Amino acid sequence: MSSVWPIAEILLGAAHADDELCEHEAETVRGLLCQLLDTDTLPEALEQRLEAFDPGRFDLETAAHRFAGKSRSDKRRLVELVREVVDANGAVDIDEDRYLVALVLALSLNRDEVDDLIVHAAGGVNGRAKRLFDVLFAGAFLATAWPLLAAIGAGVKLTSPGPVLFKQRRYGAGGEEIEVWKFRSMRVMEDGAEVKQATKGDARITPLGAFLRRTSLDELPQFVNVLRGEMSVVGPRPHAIAHNELYRTQILEYMLRHKAKPGITGWAQVNGWRGETDTLEKMIRRVEHDIDYIRNWSLALDLKIVWLTIFGRKVRQNAY
Image (tube, rainbow, N blue to C red; front, side, top):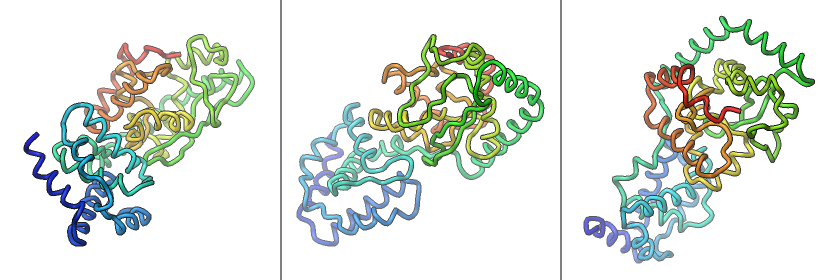
């Protein structure tokens, strides 16, 4: 604890600092926000707030006592603070300048934990390698499996009224809205402000749809989304927009999932965290696996997940 107090005392001095020190603290905040947003230039609205940054207006001593510790609860408070300031899909929402003050103080007192708050998807050579894998895998699958896709499409059309494909709006990488394709497995198609998750024995699911969902065959049209660059073969599963808006208010790190393209399969799914999330704890576990995947991505991990999707046992759990 003693090792962090010298830093705290320096920052507490900012409460009565001259213009030069205030400017220094603003630069510290700017650097941290650029790092968290993975950008060299902050949004104009945020820059305007930084120009008016004045640590002297706030009670830094209270903040220092709150964030000096390194317990698990302190880390959660730190994450909560960062999520208030920086939304993972690139949108910045700062209602009060005090968030900036508390942010720089918290990160300064917990400097060794900054990396835990930063999640970036594979980029550069790794990003190109992942995209090449996606194109080759999806292209090969569609070229060889089209008879299966045609048979499933015919079955959907013949066994229940309605379109063959269900197209639902989801969030892609960076929070960009995309349209995800699936074989229709239900008698109704929900894509509004309220979307009810499928449950065991759900009356909306058709007999053929139950089989398609249990075997994940309903997801196969998403290989087209992969070729279009909207999705990846492996990544966090895309959730309905209505569910995103719900869980982003309940799970602090939820929107970090959108640092990567959504996938047809993912690390959470092969570890048994798929299907209905009837408790908040289940969604938290899913999000934790998604973020672990993004942080630890490798081509070998993608291949492992594809293998477990085909041959693993846990991926079949809660499939209905």
